[in-house]
Amino acid sequence: MSLFTIADLHLSYTSNKPMDIFGPKWANHAERLRANWQAKVKPRDTVVIGGDVSWGMRIDDAKADLAFIESLNGKKIIVKGNHDFWWATMKKLYEFRDSLGAESIDFLFNNAYYAEGFIICGTRGWFPEDNYSPDDEKIVNREAERLRTSILKGLELKKEHPESELLVFLHYPPAYGGLQCRRICEVINEYGVKRVFYGHIHGAQKSLLVPQTAGANLYLTAGDWLDFDPAEIKPCRFITV
Image (tube, rainbow, N blue to C red; front, side):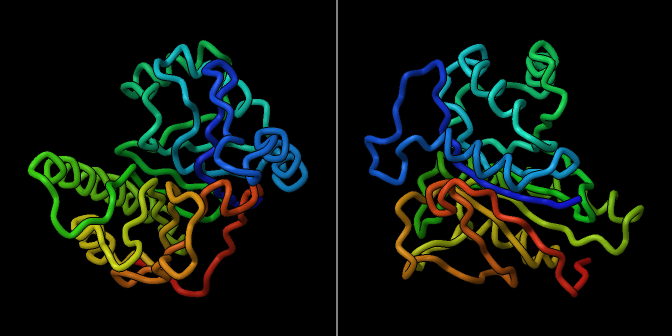
C-alpha cells in the first residue's frame, strides 16, 4: 500500500467554471486526472488532497465533485483550501459524505490519521507575508493552532506507530518567493517536521519555490504543477519526533 498526494483539483461538475481559461495545462484536466489516478493509485492506497477540491459555493454544490472523488481508487483525505467555500463543520461534512455513500473520503481538520506507514497532519494554513493586517493575524494564529492541534493528535498516533514519519499537508505554502508564514513555520520547526506538502500556487515560477524552511523540505503538489498526476510519497530513512 502506498501514499500519494495532489492538491488543487478545482472540480466544477455543477458550478460551470471551466479551468482551461487559465491556460492549456488545464485542458480536460479532470479527465486527465482520472486517467493518471486510476493508472497509479490502487484501491488500498491513500491519497491526501491538499485543498481547492470543488468550486461549489455551498455544500450541496459540491455533491457531483465529491462523487467524482469517491469514484477514484483508494482512500482520500481532504484538506481545506481557500476556494473550498462548501466546507462546513466536521459533523456536517461527515453527514454529507455519508449521504453520498462516499465511504472512501475523510477530512483533515483538527485531527490526524495513520495511513500507509505515515502520520498525516495538516491544516489550510495562510499566505506568506511580511506584514499581516490585524484580520490576517487572527487567521494565521488560528491556523497555526489548528496545525499544532493536528500535530499533537499525530503524536498520539505515533505512540502506536513509533517508526512512522509525521508529515504535514497544507494548502498554502509556508514559504514562497522570499516570504514566510512565520507562525506556521514556528510550529513546523517546534515539532521537528521534516516534510511539508502544499498546493495553492498555480503557474509557479521554479525560482520562487523555497525548497526548505523551518527545518523541513517543502514540496509543491498543485494539480497543474504535477500535470494532474498524483505524486507518491516514499518513506525516508530519518524518523521524526
